[in-house]
Amino acid sequence: MRPQNLKTKIFLDSGNPVETREAIKFLGFLDGQTTNPSLIAKNPELQAKISRGQKLSSEEVKTFYRSVIEEIKVMVSDGSISIEVYADKNTSKEKIIEQAREMNKWIPNAHIKLPITEAGLLAEHDLLKEGFRVNMTLCFSQEQAGAVYNMSLGSKKGNVFLSPFIGRLDDKGQNGLSLIENIQKIYSKGDGHVEVLAASIRSYEHFLACLALEVDIITAPLKILEEWWKRDLEIPSKDFVYNKKDLSNIPFEDISLDKNFINYNLQHDLTDAGLDKFVSDWKTLIA
Ligand code: E4P
Image 1 (cartoon, protein in one colour):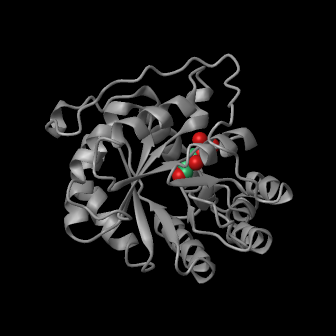
Image 2: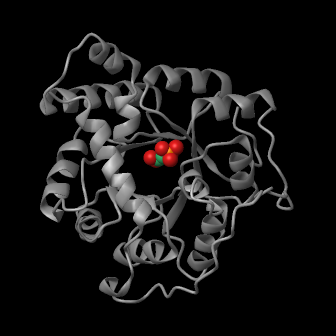
């Protein structure tokens, strides 16, 4: 059962409904689930088709994605389920919105994942005005976090998630956890309408450190949630010491939350690389 002193919402990071069932079985609760094109591509049912030499049309891949989301929805009926649009660096706002409108019809409890590109941010703004809920993904910088906040001004808490990716920064020798801390500090000057969703969690230590920081939401792979369960859903104190090893901290930037959105620097190499990876994983499935 959910520990009473747990401040953070716990999501599963997976494209496989079998794992949803497992997570709920051992934790006794689950607040939501995140998916992305790479996670859907890894789904065992889809992989079995591919290993039999089958390739799918993009329509069939979309139908498969929808069936996965519908299956998760049966188990996570009150929580949030993130569905990611297919986008590369050049995908237009109109194309993003078209996909978001279609995906949002799949289930009533979706957060639509949009990339932090100029088009993605313009789509964020318009979709929120239409009543959608969004999860702004592939965040690697404080400037990007500022832009997401700014483009969602006036939104209700719960409608906007920001997903900073810890593990992928660690992979480059930077302390991903320090980005989360910096963003929390920047957002503490605001009205709290954007929730920080710690993503790209690769270790149990990442998970504990995020709990200690009381981030709004953590999304973690099944094996990390299982480890937490084995340790009786422990909650570290705020003094938890995170061993950053030889990773270098990302310096704090005192980003203003009320610049015009074109004045935020949206560029980050890891955002570009992340988009390329999602696109290439998707393409391995398509004939
Ligand atoms: C979830 O929303 C993210 O897409 C996911 O956590 C990314 O994890 P990865 O960096 O391990 O691929």
